[in-house]
Length: 532
Image (cartoon, rainbow, N blue to C red; front, side, top):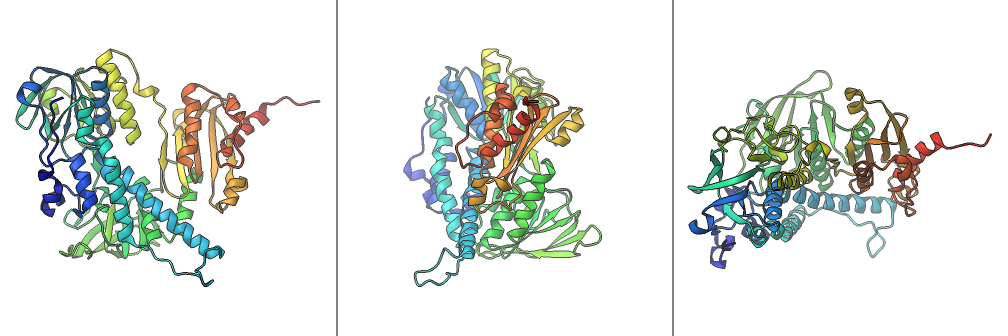
């Protein structure tokens, strides 16, 4: 495609650490050098003027899941496509989201299971004594960086170029309804897909902007374990990292203005709170942060910590203040729509909600589509971004009519136990006026759950069907590995397979997934024929 990779002389191994720190990536060790060489080459040579001349069939702005899928799939299907990467290819998922968080959660789970083995008495030292276990946080983070770098080539500039896409490294801005400018070069397109993602939303709390807080964008740069961590927010990111850092040895407090995992079923929320409290996480509910005071700024030593004080309000039972060495702000997400020149392109948007799209993924400019976290009114997940990108390519280049509303989108919170859901919750159904029958299976009697020592974890499978039918409209699974189990229900919903048929699928014994079958048997028992 004409794109040229970097030479070893321009590798990040030769860069000053400050250059990487400006990208919010540190330490600049061997793993992060490998990461950056893949997703942000220091000397990437994009297409020449001659190669970039003419009109692209499609341009993807943003190089997270949505942009990568758009540019690569379009190129593989014969389109002249381009990818414009402003920050780090792979987006939040690879660099500061799904990938590093799951690496940490693996280590947290291993630490938790090792402690359980000690408590049960079958993990002992060679002399028969109980060993003392501690988590080496530096090793945890080094492992995360190593595995993230191992995955990075799949999202690299070289990988996109090899698929046939032109890759530009720089920030894009629309200059008209069918043109975009990057690195002072104007590119013309027939179609464009905006896939700029989102970022952590930071509340306007007095003192917070000047405080050395962390978000998911900087959390994974830590090289030392903070003695005390306060998590502001009780959504998925907050819950996952609260549990992980508690397992590593931090004293963790979660400040929640509303319910933990507020979108989930009550039983799921209760199970997560119970599990995290068992791991030592403290919850303070119904609380407002009135002010954040910085008692000590971040020292020059990256292994040292700042000191912050949070002044709280919220009534009885709420402490007046909390001190911590790490404040994780996890209060939601905001779309990346500023600085794109959307007005010049005739693309309607809202700074808070994102870019307005129709059911085909198109914006108010029919040449331009938006996918993923930057689009308004869609679930903000990596897998949603990738699926919307496929939809956008199909509709934009091949004139099809795939609809966003047709997508069946599961979600998962990867705490222990995991909480996985798809479709409607009971509250969603009530709000939409959809009458449902709910079929449940408690996992406390599931043999595999018992044998894994998880019977007290509040595991459950709940499946909602349209009333008096077996048409599945939603489900929630609370269990270890729930994110894998929910796929069976998601497939059934997408394929129009009823719960009665799901209940007759033979599951291997013993598995946690039998809980789906058991919930389905509730439907069969309600409707089966009986002898008089």
